[in-house]
Length: 109
Length: 117
Figure (cartoon, each protein chain N blue to C red):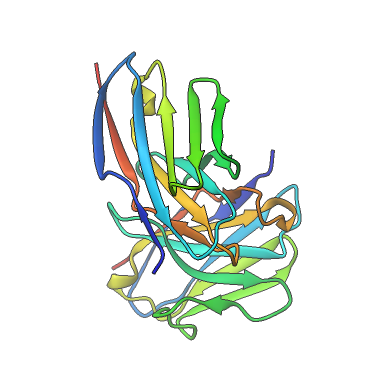
């Protein structure tokens, strides 16, 4: 079956760095997305990786290893507003999105 | 950037009534839109794929006669929750891809919080 695994919850300190991991098993693969979702709001797009390697966008970076079925989202210089759920989603061979359950990130002062 | 507008943001209705939720792509055409439901502290669950000019594709376990989807134009899809019950109370979110490119990101509407009393 198809499956996305990511930690349920993580805690980090303001100003620090945190890495949220995601492993996936899908029927075919056409890329991996990361979304941010604040409580009570809809998800917003953060990144898309389809090739191996690291993509950097300001304080956020996303990494993909297709051979390992693994991705991570790296958040630097954490701010309180980064407290949210981070959703990992893989695009399978039929271009259907398979969603992880999300990682709730708690930022402490 | 691509914007998806969803209306209403929240709605309270009585059990047995119907509620219509609209999803519009504001600056791009969307041949395909997606409807999700999210219960508290749970992940997004795809309900159905809305296809412009044809019938929607429903996920297993989603009642097509209860959740009516109409995708009448390239910029508008509607979800009608018919004969709503308290267990239908949830956060409903629509999304669409800009230009229908398969690798492009989904853009989400702001969601509709439905409460059925």
